[in-house]
Image (cartoon, rainbow, N blue to C red; front, top):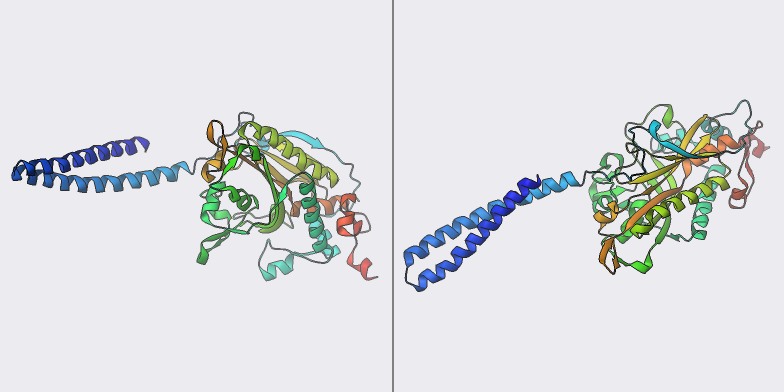
Length: 396
């Protein structure tokens, strides 16, 4: 495609040069009284102008098609990313154990949510559809407690809180790499050509689109709470039951814009920060370094944090922390001013944290034989109590 583009460009430049030469010769021929040569030069110039128009259109089409191919090329994995195609080939780099004492009749979270009357999946299905649960009473308060806890922790860690729009335009989706890769996974508002955000990363990172930052401003640390929307097309079966996979969920996101020399150090720091939240929530978790075939379209290196779900006896991903290097910054034209000129920044983001599977693991791991759910001590002041109690107990 590039060879074709260069061939057309060469022909275009030659035709333009010849057209300019003939245009100049017309005046010279007229001054000499050579009207025949002047008319011939005019005819040649007119023909060349048509050729130039045709070549310009060919070049426009070729460049458009070439750009369409280029923007679909994913980021290159970092050299430390393990080779592999499936999640089974990811590398577990760390596992944090917490002693769990679950009753013999341990239940999955969807059964606990029903007995506690805190999440109504059927009512959400009635109002909207599957994947849009209704949180009520203690469940709604637990959501609010977790959001406040995550935001306060981010504030303490030096992140500036942002409340961004939850709809974006196509330019924003392109800037962070959601478009043209994930059109089918985002909800689209046809009348206004807007997309519902899949994560706060998209609008927050786009705050800096077409911006040149002073080097001394780096790193920039932002966080934000938003609802998130994902179509999850093709998802079905037991993997989507309860809170395991939703179309709408709440999440606190952390975003950093860094100097290229600092981005991998920052990635490790962000991973440690997310792990600190999981430790404070007293959840067993492990860290997976994703293989090349499992990282996202725009990531160069990603760590997934997975919590142990005692009622389901499985690991649930609750956070991805990624370094995009200059992949997003190149699309965003996000640069910093240095002594060497304007250079591309590096961007990173992480879930800190997504609520649904955190709630699922907390319910399952904190359940007691009498139907209560003990909450981690760090949430007591945010929630206003130390446990969730069954509806019948509250009514009594």
